Image (cartoon, rainbow, N blue to C red):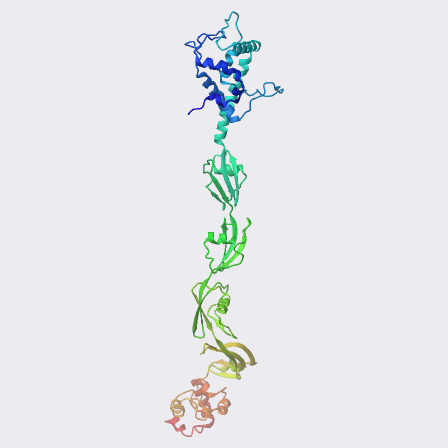
Length: 495
């Protein structure tokens, strides 16, 4: 059921005297009623829906602005803007233009049925209109201003959006004219970095009632199972960061309380996840779950004690990996000191006074002596190769010095060259230049003793000299003593 437009105007209820004028006016066509002299509408009757048209013209402005009915007696301040249009009754709104027009001479005045009081009021209004001919001109601009303001305000309200903005967990509701998320964050002074998260994404269009969330990125220097790296998270707590980074936190060691808040500048975090480690010791296998930082800690957690020289298959300071097997090696050992000889060196010097092939030892060589300490180890019952740990010199070796002849050896001795020296050599030594007898007294092809050899000009031992030199010395001996030095084989010289 539609509501009568007149019921929305409280001012109309105030003007009770208009009831006697409007009621008969709306109930009869009033063909002759034209007190202003400018002619009635077609048909001679004032259209009834003109009241509704006038009401609809001004109702939006009054209802939106919520303006109270102005006081007609209030003084207008100097320099003030045009006054608001006062709320009027529908009848006043429709006939304002006619009432504001001046009366023309000779206009007939018609009195309608409705009583003398109505006619008196109409006459008073007409007289007032004659006195203020500019009323219409003032009324029309005011109405236009109000209508314009009503339309502009509607557009203002349409562009205003209510947005719920959450920045790093802090929520607030605000009104904005921003078209998208980027413009909203710029208007609110929210700076976004490369590691920050915005939902919905920047550039997304906004509508009233939308929610925008900004989560700042926080740097974390994470050492995870011995590996250090820098990561970023938008979580506010350590526990949230672990979940966001996908770190298995069950049974893990965390260097900081999981409820610890992560500030914008970040933090250092050490995390060791729980791993499976197998320890082999004393013939037994033990598998444990641990978040130990070193192999030594894992061995201790397995209840195994390392003693003395015991060691492990991997460095005890290394990080235990998931599924790793560590073998404990029981080590027992002792030390042993041994004396070892040091061989001497031989120094050879050329001597032009000696026949070629002749060597004379001027200084005999002597071995040195050193004292060496070894470590003997047994690993899990198996002996290992001795390991030298210390060595000290007891006696330095003495160098053997030898003179080597470079002089050409003569091969001829008068009176002895034609003898059978090869036969004698075969008989004495079997033709071997280095041969010696069983006692070591005689040596060489012709079995010289050392004294005889040196008396003939030889040096060293005869068996060490060349075969040609030995034959040369033998010829010289024959010239001196004949075949007597070889009592058993001497006759071969002539055979």
